[in-house]
Length: 244
Image (cartoon, rainbow, N blue to C red; front, side):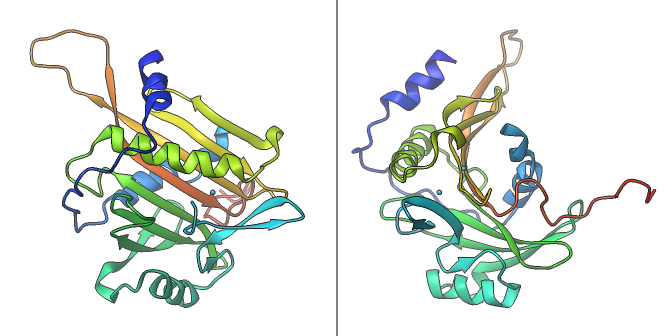
């Protein structure tokens, strides 16, 4: 734990990014997003030109991601993606989450902000209303084949520094908090409407060498940024009491 926190504290925000690794063409990262989709709400939330946060009377308001605003239909979100990133249709995929019965438009983006690593962005639309309810941005695994943990930490620090500067209510803000061996909250802020921006470093266990017995070791391999419209009552499929 001490080494992990030191890694975050010591990251050089002014250092240059390494050469971009090759980007995987698949969108299997949706599995990661599915696993973390609304579990983030149990933890208790967001970019410079890439984050759509309005400031109303000095209070930040999380309204979506760039041109994509919460409440948009899939066709409106698709147009927002094309406008924001000038992407061809081949780089925007359709995905579904069978458990939540939500649908997503997934975009592969070379650079979210100047100097950043390649990322994939999932625009998630709800089960009943089919409106935009959440946006997830993922850097690292499985977007790129060779993940540099220090690069992810540097990106996390850059984003955290920006979020903190926005002036979220301290009582609704969490910074640099470890949840368990896999999840480290870099920043979490909730606006006055209960909408959340959440930035997490995700680690996975590193297999021990053959024949060795040692304590489990974890390695940072993903950075996940989420914008969530409704953390208490998301528009996902659930079996209600008395219906089963």
